[in-house]
Length: 211
Ligand code: MD3
Ligand code: FE
Image 1 (spheres, protein in one colour):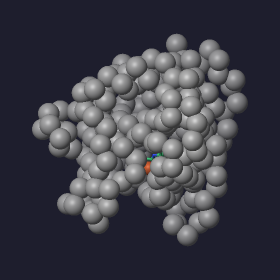
Image 2 (cartoon, protein in one colour):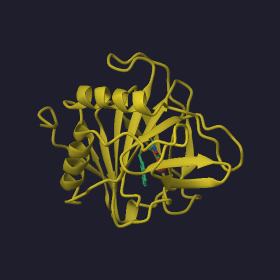
Image 3 (cartoon, helix red, strand yellow):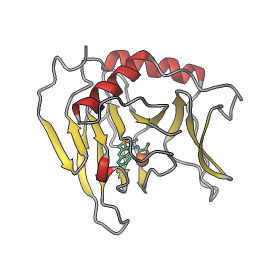
């Protein structure tokens, strides 16, 4: 299903972190369709940080739990705060891709309960942070890049570690587990462009075991 065009050059980035270049390229059109359906049910929105700043990245979620930020803090919750309704279900194409990518990277049986959908317009960046709102750091995070390419920044376990820069293109998948689960990471400002499937945007899916 996935990976007929995958060139097989799994690239270790750090202990527990593997870049699967192009792993989602073939299934990407189905992922984009599914992301559009998710967004139709739970619109992308700019969340507010606990400090009161509006985030540049527009976000929504699917699956049993969704990540939210507001003046009260960061957390996962079952209901979309915009509607009070459950987040849209995790699309089958999402679930399969996450399971297959994690298994290929050495994390068999990955069953995410949350998928954060991030939308970047040109100029949007994501500052260096750790993902530590999840209950289980033993599970990896699987990230899928769609649309315009981005420069991903990943550092170490200390914020002071100088980040490495990694170009991520449409269809690239990265699995972050083991000792890399808590590394600092971010995204450099998105360059302008026009992607055949997504136009002037990048969409990133991150699959998590949050609860
Ligand atoms: C390394 N998203 O949603 S994906 C995020 O491109 C996030 O939208 C970025 O950081 C994006 O939290 C980066 C790659 C990624 C995601 C989660 C990680 C790398 C990670 C968690 C731990 C370590
Ligand atoms: Fe993150």
